[in-house]
Length: 483
Image (cartoon, rainbow, N blue to C red; front, side, top):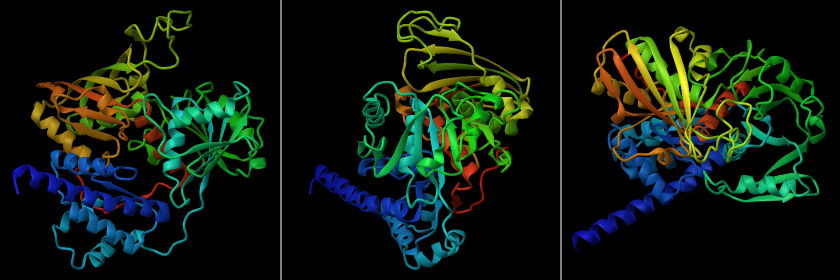
């Protein structure tokens, strides 16, 4: 057999192993509400070649190379054990396998003991999306994909203003087709008689209203719901509390920076401050979610004296396609033809989630002619000097092994560009090759999908509010943020 044929046979064998994983991954989620990942990289919904790519990626980031046979063995053992709702890192569980599958089920039974109890599944929490724009539709996609066994968040309705007689069909079409994030994975249909969109079997009630205080959600079988306000029309407690006047609403989450005394939550940073008594919360902004975890990690390891955040941000629907009147400075000029200097409150907003950085950061923004994925440039003065290799290695380890591994990703490639990060589940991705370090002066470049990465953070906050954030296993000694 020649070398080409041998490589081809090896590839076919690897494909076959990956193909066998797909029904196991889907079944664990569908039947047991178990979400599987490989060292923090989600496996649910991946195709054959994507599963192979994830294995190569985690090896490139510093993990021991993981044999596909070991991953498959762990997944088969998990199906046999039938754990309850949990987030399981298959990569970590497989570290001790190394081809030795004898007694694997018994070994995993010990590591997964917290998820093997016979406790009754939690009651699902109804979710209503008030507004169905860029973030609203991505939240819908994620919620539908996470439906699983039905014990977590349950998307029940969207609330919009009726735009046309064929409004329902148009809303369904926008959910099905997305110019940035691609086609919805599954089927989308409409039930015009009942004013519902049906996506992968999930019936989503479409409610037409322009008054957040005038809806009886219980008429649609919706109770104690969390309303996610995606409109941005109301950002303070007085405005958002109008949602609580509607029957069937328990709590409200704003997908924009909150004003006044509202808690601005960045998951991974201050989500543990959420209390049952908090009726209204903010999930802050996409930029705040992208940079706060990185700033937290750097501050704990090196101390931040001061810094400036420059965001190179994709244009949004708030701008004009072609020059026209706009109440904001410069934003009236064409978004698709210009770089537009504008303001950002992200630097100040960091302090809402990370008070120790209050008064230490300034910020500005440039809107650029790209539809998604932005870049934050962090110019930092540190208390202790850092070398490029040292701070990069620290942030790489933080992205893999720390409590911020859901928020921070790390990449080293001389070829990556913004579109490579479309669809990232992480809040921000540190570009290690772009790092500049000169004593106590450091510049970090952080990519972020300002739509999907942010939406993933919103979902994590929702899970905490609903008490349905899955237990994360296995529990291992992790890298501390200070070294």
